[in-house]
Image (cartoon, rainbow, N blue to C red):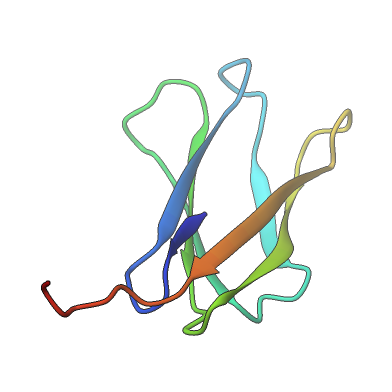
Length: 98
């Protein structure tokens, strides 16, 4: 994610199972969670299991950070999915017109 400090900044990730009964996400957690807020919901309109993960920036000052979100799944082949979160928060926009 890249954006100016003070501006709303979020990313959305869709997680789609390969088969109709292939995947359930059992738990979601963050490595740190200090600079992010996250929300996971199942999309009821899809035939295959589909989840929507929304990640929002909470950092209000210039700088960068990284974190990871972990999705615990019902899959024997991939019991954990890691989603890396990287953000570069830029200086606030200058509101003065020239």
